[in-house]
View 1 (cartoon, rainbow, N blue to C red):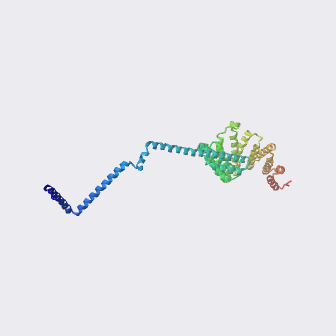
View 2 (cartoon, one colour):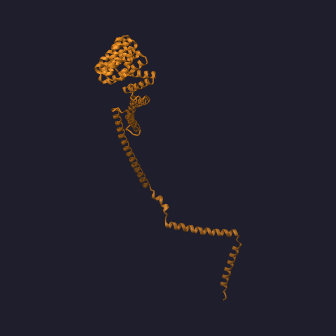
View 3 (cartoon, rainbow, N blue to C red):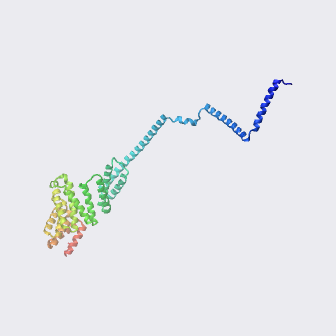
Length: 385
């Protein structure tokens, strides 16, 4: 089919453009061709990415992105209050349990102390010590209203343990416990001038005499005497309100007089026993048993000092009092009188006094005193009956 001229002209123009395009492509270097491929790939990638985000925006955010929206300010405040309330409940429960446990231990401590006190009354000292030791361990676990209250409870327990050890002659243990007692007393506000403090010092002085610590013992005795004398007047001797203090003063003087006589300080012993005897006469009465004991002790001091007449008068006085109030002491007093007369050289009266003492000892079945008297009689070449 023949083409018209205009159609042919258009066809020729299209072919010419095609040739030009092909020639251009053929002349491109290889790297430019590679670049074109990269550009094409990037275009495709961008198209996919745009399509992806468009799709994601249509679907909405995933669940992981929603979490921050859940933790709001109000919810955090509510959570904090909840934690606080739970903590308070747990703390209250713990405090309540501790309070119940503490109350239980307090009742147990009280029961143990009562048992110990009853054992002391029944003279079951070993059992009492065991109870007090148990109480001392338990008191460390109990929380009391204040440290002062706790110290006073500990003081009572340690004081009782110290006194029991002292009474049983456990000197080393007693010394430790009594020193602890003094320390706790100071923590509780007790001063050195108070009678309870002086009483503990007196016991420690006695322990010093047992261990032959002469200087320490005398220092403690003098401490006790000085503090008591500073608080006692002549009027106090006749006052019932000061009777306990006066009794303690007499006890200190008696212990001091006995010790100074044993170590040869006869002047100090005479002074102590004289004061003690005067106090005893005024407080307990001239015919009291303790008055006879002190009269006999002072007679012994005068005997050792060679003042035999004074010694004989006091010994005879002790015998008169004992015959009325304490006949169990008569054998000892008669024996003491016999020795004073012997030292004076009055052998006749000495023999008579020793025989009477032996007879009384036999009647009382006092074997120890009887053995001592018989030994003295043998030295005088006297028959034992």
